[in-house]
Amino acid sequence: MAVTQKNPLAEEFNVLSLIRFAFPSMVMMLFMGLYTIVDTIFVARFVDTNALSSINIVCPVINLIVGLGTMLATGGSAVVAKKMGNGNTEEARSNFTLIVVAGAVIGLLITAAGLFFLDEIIWGLGASEILFPYCRDYLTIQLIFAAFNMMQVLYQNLFVTAGKPTLGLVLAVLAGIANIVFDYVFIVLLQMGIKGAAIGTGIGYMIPTIIGTIFFLMKRSELHFCKPNMDASVLLKSCSNGASEMVSQCSTAVTTFLFNVTMMKLLGEDGVAAIMVLIYSQFLLTTLTIGFSMGTAPIVSYNYGSGNVKQLKKTVRICFSFIAGISIFVFLFSLLGGESIAKVFAENNRNVFEITKNGFIIFSFSFLFSGCNIFSSALFTALSNGKASATISFLRTFGFITMFLLVLPRFLEVTGVWLAVSLAELFTLILTVYLICRYRKQYHFF
Image 1: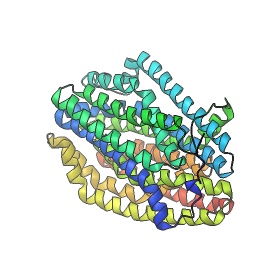
Image 2: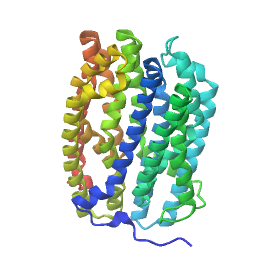
Image 3: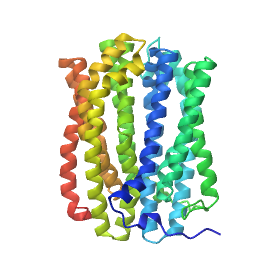
Image 4: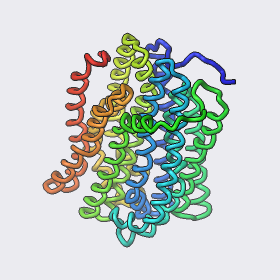
């Protein structure tokens, strides 16, 4: 028999308790960022920078997998948390189970399709003759682990909805440590090169997937597996709610492709390696914001679903204040520590180091604006306003950045590439402020 517990999302949160609740998600995302960065450091130092470039070439495929998982996870989390807030616990469990099953099936389909069209995908992503063998080795293994990748993304979000963010943190730490250990074993000791990096990452995906599945089967929380009702409308609603996250990842995939093509044209393989360092560093430095947004989103959904306007307002105000502080901290860290970060990745390649170091000076300003944009997109997702959320994500990660990336390098060359990111975040922030003002009375979050 399932244990009946008071839903942790129903707590009357203040500043400290809200940060405490979101803290596991923040640390979890930070560890995810760290072990992703460590993966690329091992490749850069113990293989070569061409291998590093090849990971960035196939990165759009990984973005697609993560995007699909995040779309289902965040959109589904909003659906499930709202029904829990309304007291429809049994329906929430059924929806939750259906969402997880759908994620596993999609992952398996991606594996089959990806392996069948493997070479065509790699050439289409712009790989050079030099980078093609690296890309093929890495992407083959990543596709084999696609279902595990999908599932671990789903569980990272749904642990929070189940009121178990600490479990997600523990599993993220275990996955990160495992990835680092296996990177050392496969890349350094066994000299498996880029294949070893892909296998280590895949094992990292498996840990939260396997343990998470066991946890939800054991029915230790209010949210657990049950026999699902095959309701397509639930999946459509989840995809609609989480569309912004899918848009964000797909946009990242396209812009990564554009970055690669532009830098290959301007600076060759070294330019692609440098842009990868910047992109991965951006992910690491925004993990606190992403984790905080992910950790607080179910609280917003719950209070919105239960009609607790007072707590909703309080939560949103605390969140924006915290995001502002984090944004300033990350900006300063990036501006002052960019050279050190570049050295970690490219100590053995002076050209890549110089390109990356110079890029950080301009790129750092994007962090002043990105935090508010990321949280606002998550906020609208939590309020089941997929349209507003998707608009923010689309323009931030694709619309504005693509426009600037296609225009600025023609006049400013490499400087235009770095400037495109900061300007895209600034223009998105202007739109974000407008949307918050527009929907303020509808949702009463201010």
